[in-house]
Length: 115
Length: 114
Image (cartoon, rainbow over all chains, first blue to last red; front, side, top):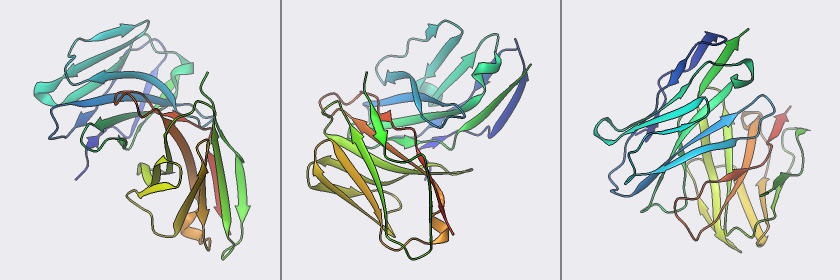
């Protein structure tokens, strides 16, 4: 079973629009960690944020914000006032304490910001 | 800054060749990983290593092997390359000490098997 689901395969928005990338996860662990990565066209995955299962506070970093809701097993990512440089593939990932070292990645959402 | 370096950005190999993909990290991380990335499938774990000479199979180990003789280096080996192994390969490293640390990725190797 897929542990991390990113239902949106591709999204296109016009510059300055807000966009939300969805992530739904599945785990039986009570302690786990969630991550978002950005993969620009250059190919390297860039870490954006991590959250542990005990911290449901939403976080804002500049134009980026994250909404973690354990009740719906979701960890959504919003970009406000999108820019062309935000065009990339975004991955959500899960790391469970009991499986230690592994990351489980979603299939990614390709975001295109149109100027 | 943490640096994970993969030896090649692009490789073209022939079917049946033995292929080595090299990865080096400079942060003394215990854990290292090899992923394969294909359109619509995301990142799939091939193998990971949690210490020198230690390895664990991931989700898709068939057709691959790995080697970790030194802590900083993790090699992925395609024993006999096949066209269905054409893909983007990503190496990553992660500190073991804290479970919630992020993984750091290399720039990727795009392998084409002809």
